[in-house]
Image 1 (cartoon, rainbow, N blue to C red):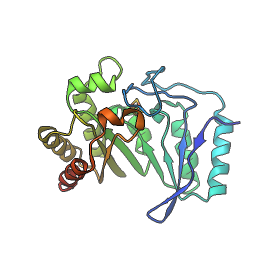
Image 2 (cartoon, rainbow, N blue to C red):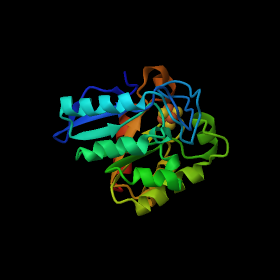
Image 3 (cartoon, rainbow, N blue to C red):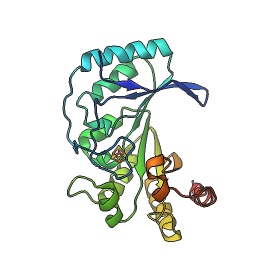
Image 4 (tube, rainbow, N blue to C red):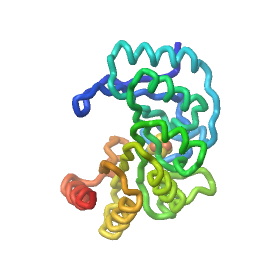
Length: 230
Ligand code: SF4
C-alpha cells in the first residue's frame, strides 16, 4: 500500500487534473502559523528517503491510467522537493507523456540541486505570503538562517533560467501585506520574478479566517491592482 494521496480529479482549462501528494506526512522548510496541514514537526530542506516508494509509484501509475489524467499536479504535504525520489517521480509521469505541475513554496528554487529537478516540470508554482523580514520570521517560521531577501531572489534567479510556465501565487493576509505600501512592494517583487501567471489568494481556512482573512471588497481591489501589472 503506497503512501501517496490524491485529490478528486477535476477539470481545468478542459484538462483532467490529478493532484498527488508525495509525502507521507508534513515535511516543510517553513512552519507557517496558518498552515492548513498543521505544525511542522519535521522542518527540513535536504532530501530524505521515505518508505514504500516503489508501491507508491505503482499506485501513481495505476491512478494515472484509471483517471485518464492529462496533467499531474504535485501538491504535497509541505515541500515535495525534499522527497529524495521526486526527480524519479517526475520522470515516471513524463514517461507517460504527461505534463507536470510542481507546487513549491519557492525557497529551494535557488539551490542548484533543486533547480535541476524543477526544470524538468512543465509548470512550477512559487509563493509569497509575507514581504518583510520580521513577518517572514514571525508567521512563516522558516529554518534558521533563511531570509526574505534570499526567498525572493531564489524565485527571481530560478525563473530567469526556467523554460516552463512559472506561476506566482500571492496570498494576501489581513494586517500583514494588505496595505498600500505592501501592495507596491508586491508589484515590484512580481515584476522582478516576471512570472507567466499570477494567482491572488487569501486565507480561507476557517481556523485562521477571523484574524487573517480580508474582506471581498478589499480582496477584489488588491487583486485588480496586482493583476494589472501582468
Ligand atoms: S510553506 Fe505551505 S506547507 Fe509549508 S508550512 Fe507554510 S503553508 Fe504549510
